[in-house]
Length: 315
Image (cartoon, rainbow, N blue to C red; front, side):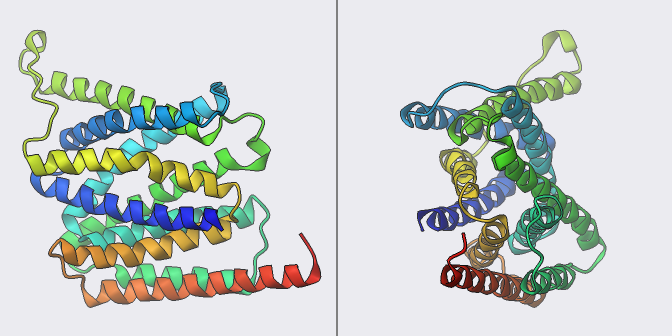
């Protein structure tokens, strides 16, 4: 039961991160430099927290090649998705963005679970996938700039799905003897996050300088107190938002975990958009309702299977 509570907490953290990212973007803009600055600070804040959790967990602090390579690749995708996310939020409101982000993180690992990890394809899963696709089509914004934003949202959909897929791969039973424990893996991700973003920050400043021999680095801190508070808060909760779903993946089926998180985040971020002064369009609300309906069908179907297995005494 506690692992399902992990998912509820993760959904709340993801929703809060969306709000913080949106608030930061409104004051700092959506340039690549502002994204890199955001990533540098939150990784620096999150690293000592994640390291402390790893140290006090009592787990083996050994580093493996498999987890190191996967963490480095995953962070590179994270950085790219962060920039794309900032651009997407400049064309679409929070509810539209979160819809694409969370449906991508659900649908792609969900499909891989059936095709690669040999999970059963039941009727309720098919119904869920159809409703998710309908939700995406209904939620597509109109207009030229909206269509431009839609392309960014499609990229968000694909990248969030790839991130979920890689997390599932790291936690799969076939990789158990090659991977690090979750606490150490999160530490590696933050280390790579700092190294990549500081390097990218230096490169951007070098390119922007008229005189490469006298590079003037602007302050790494954001220009406003609100932006600084947003990125600090993001760093304080980011490690938990990464660690909890990894823990849950060891005990909760993929076909339950990703839909449950997706439905919760869509609802939470749609409600949160009102607190940011954004009034979601009717199309967005309808899309979220269709997605939640699909996820409800999926979760009810999975629950009935669990009940039947318990009655039959099967594992």
